Amino acid sequence: MFWFIHALLGGIIGTHFHSIFFIAVAALISHFILDMLPHWGIGFDIDYFKEFYEAKITKNIFFFALFDAFITLLLLFIFYHELHSKLFILGAFFSLLPDLVSLCYFTRIKNRKNYRRYLKFHSRIQKEADFMFGMLTQIVILIILLYVLL
Ligand SMILES: [Zn+2]
Image 1 (spheres, rainbow, N blue to C red):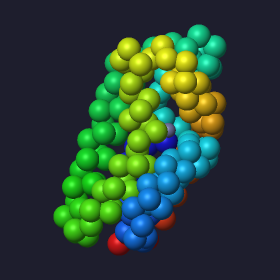
Image 2: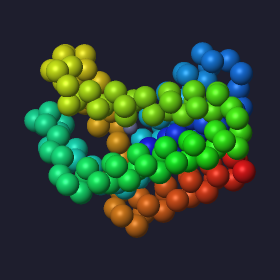
Image 3: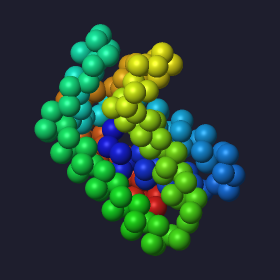
Image 4: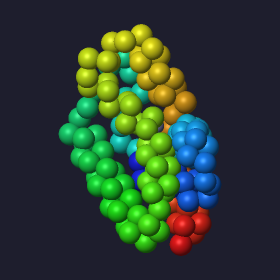
């Protein structure tokens, strides 16, 4: 699932509630729920990863992630500017956290047992779909999120 979709949903959670604890927990849970919906993205081979715990990062994957990160930062900047809500950013942060934690794969943490378990869980819940359907679901979600925000 695109990072910017996670971020927008987390942001919405942040602007609708007042408890920092509740926002953090709800935004975290929202991440995993979105990942369970059918979606398409350029990522590493999940089946291969599940079996060998090895992510092959190609140039395409790298630039796709860069693009996603850029759009995410841009949207966070725009909506923070519009809403002046720190809780929006807090919600967005916690909704992105599960994927940010995944980046520790590129550090020494990679080989810790619990971390390994987490990454396997995170890849197991992904519901991958073909391009047409997987993009359509994300576009529909995006439209709903923007509708709620604007
Ligand atoms: Zn995720």
